[in-house]
Image 1 (tube, rainbow, N blue to C red):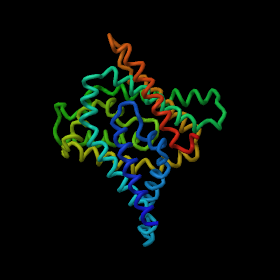
Image 2: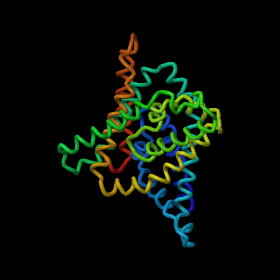
Image 3: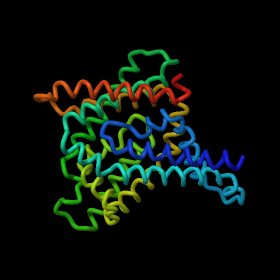
Image 4: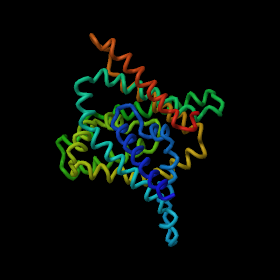
Length: 286
């Protein structure tokens, strides 16, 4: 039994590694990957349990396994982000258009996972409104002035820490909700490359305020999102579906050129079918 318990934590680290790496892919959602790997509900319930503070001495006993689960998951996620950050950055820099089509295919493949959650509900005119609302939110984020959150802007150091905390708060929502790409949120905020470089170089003056904002965002939103997704399932997942579709449109890099006309469709379809294949690991999609 102890061996099985140990192996469960090893699997948690591995899944965390995959999810952490996927968070750096523009257009792809770490939350969606968590759903694909069958770990999303456990993540939300563990966070919710820990955030349900109590003076009762049984609080730590009750949440012992939640703490252990989140520690191993976080370790795997951080490892995935640190190891994959630089190779991914180089790949995007050298083959931006081809990479963008791959990310678009991955995001479209992830759309199936999110939309499946609404299949038992009737699709009507209000459903279209929810999807358009999700897409509109992505668009509104995309029109934030370019460089507003960038630490290279001509601003005081203290103000930049504040801006990074706010960026972390915004990104925290993408960390929790499936269908919203954390890395694409960084792209929309104009700090994707800076974040990739900071992760790879472990530049803590940049990472600490960003992490503080992300932690605050998780604490402030987890309970609200859990309640909303439990009591308004159809609306929640249709809005998330809109997030995914909106992000696909925003990721579109323009028409390919030259040999890219042959590579882009292949990469798009490869990513789409790869994600659909991975979805078989999620019992809810079987």
